[in-house]
Image (cartoon, rainbow over all chains, first blue to last red; front, side, top):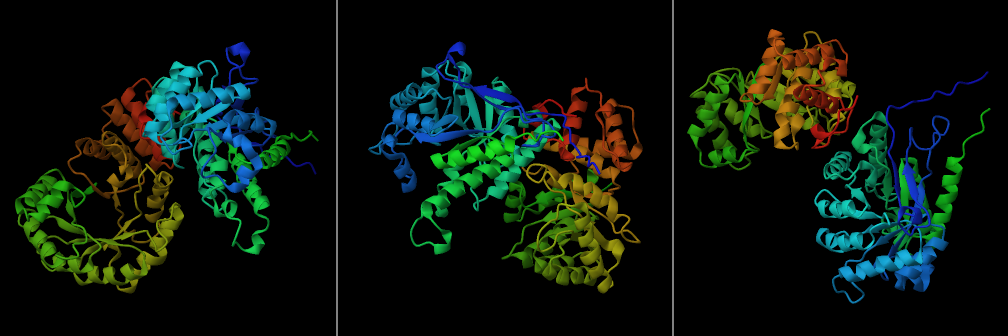
Length: 324
Length: 311
């Protein structure tokens, strides 16, 4: 007996958002990243094929990180001492795009300087032609101080800039507006605040298709259920037609997973936890794949092997079944 | 609509200060003004008063009863304080606000209400908190609150069920469920218990300028479920005007017509529709957007009125 598979159809759709300017558009990127455009829940290809697969970013820093797992530092080796080299290695590891996260201090512990931050971004742009997200270190004043000159110095490249939060978004949005960049809007796992921030940012005149929503999340075992539900709720609202939730979502999976005990600690843990490196990569991969299922369009990872595994999962999920 | 005036509440800095100074005139003024503004009972929320309950509760009853005749509602978790106040009551039948379905409260508070012939507000909240779903809230009333009243022979007409208003800012999914809860509670028992809610809770944590609109739209919706009693701000003239419009079925203004339509849709177990709204009228669109967030159709954000309408 033939079985009729019920299909949902939705009133709304996620906005299509692109960034990264190629030579044709006045930049130096080798390609443009396009995400969003979903007309149904993730990977329900039998309803409406997903127009753009989720993409994978690798996170790099402007200098050797102080707080990254020794596993990551061993894997990357000496490239972490040079953002250009690191960018090149990350591109070779198969990333679709890069996220450069700026440090709060320099190697000697002194406050980060805008000139150094601009130089690091330029190095990355020269070394790799992938589209780029640049995130401030996460302290409002420093973020503004570093991101504004970067926005000016990279006009035309069409980057995504963060961190915009409810307490600090105006300066970065203005810098993005003036220099043809995008912004990422971050809210602390809260649907109301996510939406509110998007309204505030668009009120400043930045078109909604230049915003990537970062709803923040927790790693597997550390609040992922909550993060998952928030993203699912935002996506359902988007499909129901709520314009200020109709934005692609990014999640910083690497940041979250590599601070869990499971990924951070290799000694004095139960034997049943198994091999440390394998466990850490599993942690990052499973967190990423779960969040992709809840609607993430961009996942930011830290380990190259996680990139490979998440890529395989995306390819499987994107496969459109042959009609019977 | 039976309004229990909410304005003597310890959360207000003025109330806090007046209480610290034992400023009888402040409370008498507030009581008289609330009653003049239409309050039929006065809620007194003085906090737990762990140290000075023995003195404060009786003092407050004497102070307020010296100038008004209405029911006093003791809004406190301090049972000893409530009892000290109840002993001083000489005028209208008092109210205890409240008990929940938690074992310890449900054991003690109804007995106190019975002993002093007080009405008792009973919250549909158990030890695991407030359920979202309407049915689960009704079940708490049917399985815990009403049976406890029956057990001690407490009159059901004095048991005021409060199925709980939660804020649209953060607990949005609770808002539409309350509609179903109030509807069902009225048919769940014979005679039906009175039902009351704390209306202003719906706009807790909402920017001050948006609170009155959310309160009065929700009021119109809840009146559509048959709600006849609530704790609210008797000084909110626009709220009272919506209540009047619905009670008198005054369709002489376009806004009034919309409030009536919202009420009637809910009463008919329907949802208000965009067709009910004159979309060229900014005030009506603001009401429509508010309906949408209260029905959890559109995610609440502080700037929800600035967003283009959905639906």
